[in-house]
Each structure stands twice: as C-alpha cells, then as structure tokens.
Figure 1 (cartoon, one colour):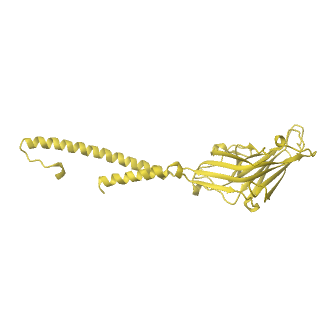
Figure 2 (tube, helix red, strand yellow; figure 1 turned 30 degrees about the horizontal axis):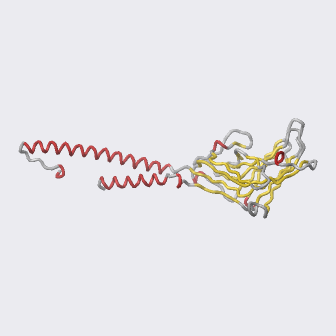
Length: 278
C-alpha cells in the first residue's frame, strides 16, 4: 500500500470513528409498560414501624389511556406515640431487564411515568386529600437481590400527570435497607431489573389510613457507555496520520536538499541523477 493510499484509509477510519461516537448514535435500551399485566410485575415490601398492607390491581379502564396499575397502601397506626408506620412497595418489571456485562456499561438512566391520586380515608372514615394522603413515587432497581431507589416525587394530582427524571447515574441511587452502596453500572455489573417504588408513611403517633395511587405509561431508558474500541481506533488512526504527515514533511525537506545540492554539482559539471530517479 502506497503512502497516499494509507493516508486515505486512515482518514476514512478516523471519520468513521467520529461518526460512530456521535451522541445521536449512542446505544440505548427502553423498557416500558402501559398495560400492567399481573404476570409482568412482582412486588417487594419494606415496612417501618407496624407497616401496613399493600394491594395491587390491573385496572382495564380509566388510565392514560386504557389500563393502569392501581396501588392501595393501608398503613397501620403508629406503634407508639413517638414512632410512626410506613410502607414501601417496590414494583419490579420482570418481563425484561438489563445486563451490563452483555449490553454495555450504563452511562445514565432516564425515568418517566404518569400518576394520579385516587384518594382514600383514615381509620375514622375521614377522607384524605392530596395534602395528607398522596404517595411518593420513584424509580426502583434490583441488583444482586438488593433493592435501590432514587429521588421521589409526590403523586399529589387528582388528574393524570406526567413525571420524569433524566440523567440518573449510579450515585443517584441508594439502598432501601439503609446500608451504604449504589448499584454497579460498570461492564462487570450483575444483571438488573427495574420498576418503580410507591411509598407512604404515617405521622408520629398517628392513626392508620388507606390511600391509593394510579400509575400508567411507565418507562425507563438506559443509556450505555460508548464502546472503548471506537475511541482506540480513532486514536490509532489519528496517530497514524500524524506519523505519515511527519514522514512526508521529512521526505519533502530531504528532496529539497537533494535538489539544491544537485543543482550545485551540475553547475560544476558533474552528472547528478534526479531525486525521482533514485
């Protein structure tokens, strides 16, 4: 391969590497559900104080639109005047998951869903509004049997409302059991499943109550880290172009010297072949 052809090949390789690392071509995986069939979801409960009882149903009408997932959380009265009861219900989508080892390390996660407050009442039969009965909702993740969640919002609207969190990194998640640690988003991380957490807590020394939330159009978008091989190829191609450029500059300077010395000796009557003849 001539130097000119090699230079052209390296230029094409560098262009291909730059194109492949453009943000528009970044790999992403979308997990979503707007039907909430019972077989596609599992639940896990974390209780505080005397906890409570969760009830989950697939409601076929009244969603945004169509089916939605209804979560009722019945919180028991506080066990003492100085404590409170709370219930965290992890809803995990088991129809699909994500494996960093085979699908790529995770750069960030976007999360979105629609929610609605469906009302409820306390143990005395007093209706509870959005100010004292709304659930907190956030993304959920399980890896190696450990439950994680992140920043929550209050589902305090009595009409369907879209909520979203974008650019969540591993450091934005925390363990539900209170221990230190975040999920492993690297290429050596274990497979994970995702979902959402619906939670509510009573007041200190408060009585029990039962309120409900609806969830629809659940979606998680997982953005993976660009393949390192692309960056390596780009670096090698640019290094090759730099080397060829330096080599070409040295050859050009050498030819200019040969031409100058050749003209000098020809003037003295010596026979000196042209540089292209060597």
